[in-house]
Length: 411
Ligand SMILES: Cc1cc2nc3c(=O)[nH]c(=O)nc-3n(C[C@H](O)[C@H](O)[C@H](O)COP(=O)(O)OP(=O)(O)OC[C@H]3O[C@@H](n4cnc5c(N)ncnc54)[C@H](O)[C@@H]3O)c2cc1C
Image 1 (tube, rainbow, N blue to C red):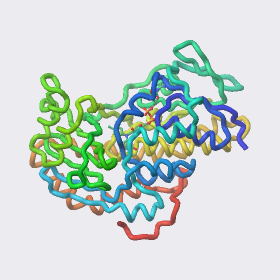
Image 2 (spheres, rainbow, N blue to C red):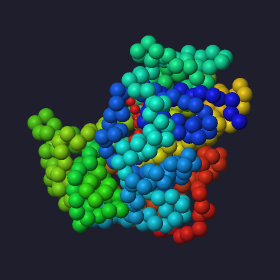
Image 3 (cartoon, protein in one colour):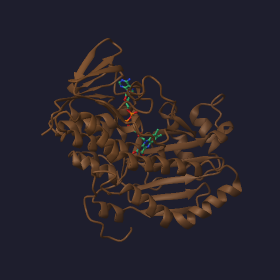
């Protein structure tokens, strides 16, 4: 039985809402404070991938089925060159059976809606920008820009990459995040037609000039895509003279279909460029009664499609541990949470960063070498490494366990 009665969660993104849903399941009351006046991009924004480990974590708070119900199950993860050469094709059925959980593509809004319903809209306070906190022997007080305050036993900073809670914990100084050297232009477009983009395959294309392109079908009508452009290709993305869609169409003009069709079918307003950042793994996720989860603690580049997955895992583990917090042990419990999660999250951050550097290859011969390397290793070594990282259930790293014992052959 926990001694925590109330938690204050800063940020209503995936990390904050997952933590809040987990806390409520543990019988801990919580309030979520979000700076935005509306849920914003989360409800209108793009799609993404949730891998098996994210669904295993969601299962621990009873939400995996609700999320999967509105998602597309992925059966293949396919890698291609910009000339259309198939470099590798991972079958996902085997790992799905082994893990006892799917890998899915979905709209961000699907996950957000399920999490919001689990937490309850009345517990999510919009337009409440956190500015700082004070702490005493009995609890913690959060301060907001509008002059209001809130009081709880623990403060959970789920306020993303540029977390104010993180900076506050470090007495007002935190170095800026690390820029990866590339931007992801993400969008959803209306593009019916199985022949162009088949359901159930996550396509991952690697090209020359520091260009990449990811896409997958979200449902009968919609396709989600990410054009990843390195700064070295900056001159080719001419947004000074051209609208975003036209600038991308020019950069990808030599790529095979459906890339050109996907770009040309997309509304200009739907294309959202996101410069990609992370932070080199560091400790210091907690201080006294304050703790960080999600991108606030372990932001990572998008290359493993694991940022949200790790935010979900951290939220579930934190809620679980706070649900067993002994009297007077809030700081110790928060430190134990960091010990349980830090190595796994750090592995994800580091691996994701390394994959991203592969995408920066610019000139033809180097890209050709990368293609050959991917063709040789991606169906074996890279897949095995990726899965052992994703489905790592070593207890010293995380209390999350794989639902089913490993028994099947690799897919
Ligand atoms: C292009 C791209 C593609 C991606 N694809 C994938 C993918 O396929 N799979 C995957 O798992 N991950 C993916 N990710 C990563 C994933 O989106 C993030 O890791 C995840 O959204 C982090 O969630 P979070 O709740 O920790 O942070 P955020 O989503 O950033 O949420 C933080 C919230 O806190 C609020 N906030 C900030 N400051 C304050 C304040 N002072 N007071 C109150 N509220 C505040 C913000 O408004 C925001 O709502 C991708 C990321 C990018 C950029």
